Image (cartoon, rainbow, N blue to C red; front, side, top):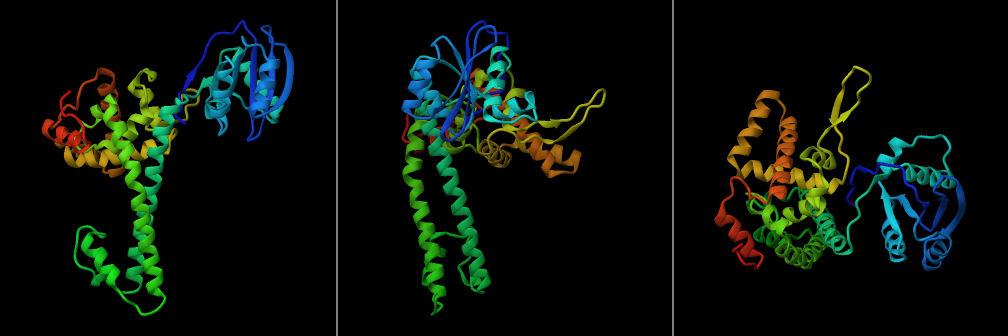
Length: 367
């Protein structure tokens, strides 16, 4: 779920309804325009429960609830009944509301009062089509991680058994030549079963990638943002699609600082009085987005001389590769923001390389 740190401001002069959601139920509190509790009840999070909610809460009421695992189905159901729904950023809400009194009814009332006061931090929900695209991308990330772990396990197993050094030399540990050599290995006992099971599982996972990648490619061709990000040397359709999916409409971020904050690429703030303290990177927001940004830094540094020189200068000044990586990440976030905002292509684009990338997707190379 993409998160958007925006706080609505201004007191509402209308009825408000808030729900505290669990996996199966929603505790509801309804406030009058004057802030009085006019109703409090619990619904089941199913068709019958949503109909019950619609029968007891006027359509002009402003509805709010936290972004939990049930946020999407509840949002879809209540919007279909005609309600104005706000989904609340849970982490930001926790900073606003701190109380020892913790139960569903109390939480529902807190959300309702904050909504009426215009103090709720919103969470950005994806539309159904974008959600499907995100699901495909996340599945590809997960499968890729599984493949990486399994490859490491196979290598470790072969080393443990003292035969890894017998494999043909190759820059790719799982090249076609090496796979054939692994398949030809014979222990003469149950170790053959162990190794063949691992290799069969690897083949199975790799085959799962193909249909997912085909769909991602099709979506990439249709996305102006993805095609724009692919003009960056070192960024392919997959990485561009991941970044584009998590950024979404760049206009929802007032500045590149807000986009950096979304990626968690800002230092934690621990100011107190006149003391200003900055800690490690906050690392808030979606982990997959930070992972994509980290991969982008590695590839862009290798393939773009100006970015590589910037990375090396920061590393020389700070003596830290980690600090250089973070600073370069922050620089690239600013550049991503500028590209998407102004629709300008990568400053150091290789046009022929960009054309080849699009051609490999089966698309037209003319813009």
